Image (cartoon, rainbow, N blue to C red; front, side, top):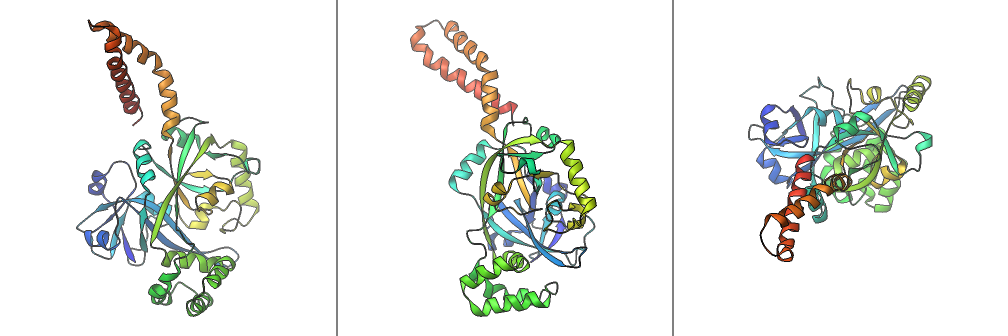
Length: 356
């Protein structure tokens, strides 16, 4: 467990493109952290019905080193703290998070180079009824503009998942931590104790399915390596009628529970400001292992932008080919491959520069 500190301008100067978590070199070596890590926070909420709800909130973060931090500290930027529901004026002596390794596949590393650019963290919510089972998402039009893309073009969503729902082998290792966590009420402690004693994966799956609180707690404590999974989805803006419908639902219903269709994010997560929302169908939430009020990393899809730009620059490409051929006093056919290559190179460089 790590106590949370705030990042500063020195941290921001080290990277320019991602939300950051700073750790010292000992922590980075111990957890085998490379470019990215998963930051996890066990959030506890008591809803208006009096029920206590546990929620493992996690977010993907860019890792940087900071020698000023001690071994039990990490520094998180404001957006990451918002994503995992740590309030602005949090208690530094009581607020702790855990870290896990984030692993990219080789293909993912290659595609990340092409998909470089601005990322935004968004809060996951359910869609309008008319948008259910559709291959698109709804988000604020300002977000689409910030991502430097257009309505109707595709976005890349990055999800975080573990190979197993719970790393069962870690239960022995973390059992003392769970027992000493005073936030975990007695009945849940008893269920986890039985689970550790029984040591059967099928029993684990049963409890995982039957008790969401137990599942959230064990996921928080037991999983120490995650993988990045991405999917494409078409972007459309939210409309005013849906915004009004959600607002009315929250007025008419007790909407501060994770089980609600449209939970009031600020009440449920007990924060004053939040991320902007993305409304996803259950198929995409399941694909990316996302639950209600999780955060997801979103960026534009480079190929859609490239298609638009190559159409716009097609005339430039043709003109530059013929200009190069005519400018060189040589046989046309011998210089043509060179002209094509040079023109293509210049055109692609201009497109990349315009879309960084």
